[in-house]
Image (cartoon, rainbow, N blue to C red; front, top):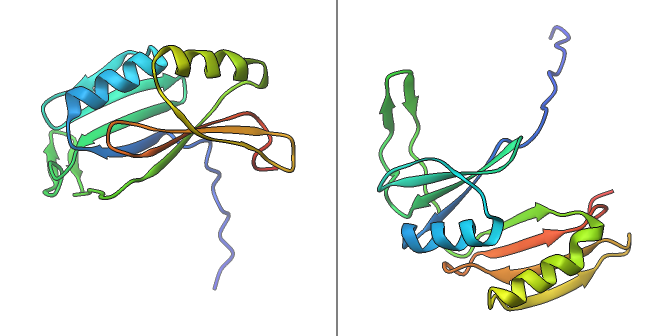
Length: 140
């Protein structure tokens, strides 16, 4: 077999969650992160989390058929049950995030201090997904 160079991946561009009530979940994440909606319709919403990442919220069951676009076909996809997503935060912002979550009446389900010293805050979104905010160093 000939040697093939492994091309690099630059970042994780999208994360997707599947939700039962799209307007409710959209309001939750917009209130939490104060981010713009890039695109959306009755099936999905795309939120710009930062310059390199988009959070996609799909209405559960609405993407079971391929999406035919002018530029090609997006394969079908879906998810069920409580999923997990983690957002990185600055170490110096941990206390501000704890205050914001309290202000928004979002209960912190768990606070974990990892062996590296990093800290994670876990809470639930309206669809019972486990959302994590983590300071640098969770994964060395």
